[in-house]
Amino acid sequence: MIPAVSIAGFSDELVKIAKAKEQPIDVEAIKRKVELWSRLKSSTDVPIHEEHGDANEYGGGFYDTTTKSIGVGAGRDHESLAHELGHADLDQGLLGKVIQHRLLHGLFPLTPIAGALGGMLLSKGKNWGALLPIATAAPTLLAEWLATRKGARRLEEVGATPEEMAAYRKNLGDSFATYHGVIPETLLAGGAGYAVGRMGQS
Image (cartoon, rainbow, N blue to C red):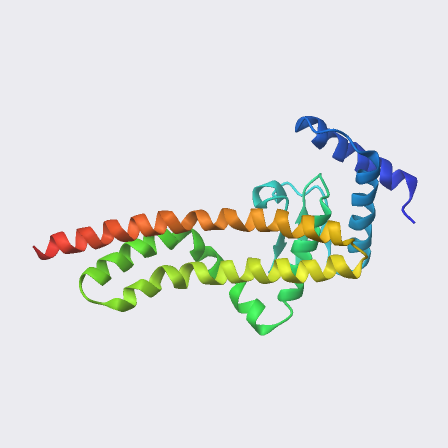
């Protein structure tokens, strides 16, 4: 059972978001989101910092591998919370600790640069150059995919309906697709690097 004050508090925030996006306000749907949020929060011992100032920069939430805590935005989106709990669950194993390490995660924005360097190496017959952008991108992409899967398990455990699970997979799939934007950038950079490498040989 969710306290009425909790529903009111969450509802105010969600109504503001709905109005800002010019979406119809469904009170029952809002109450259901609040219920799932509360169940998820009650299901974990991971510290959750609500209305975190940095959360919106990370798509509504983030998991901090140093403090082992989660930061979430004012919207209190249950799907974002489930995904971040997935990151926390992933961090319990060796693979998760490695691919979510700050050093590897920090390499992801450098993928286009790695692509350019890889292209130059390929132009010189060093085929291993193709592995450079893969090495910078793969840890983050794998971590996000696994966290989404583990987040889905969390939602199922707190009683999400098949329709709610389908919405989670779609929305998180759309979010994951934003990471794909690095692929065309990397291919373009790789082509440019290859061309520069060939020019240097002529």
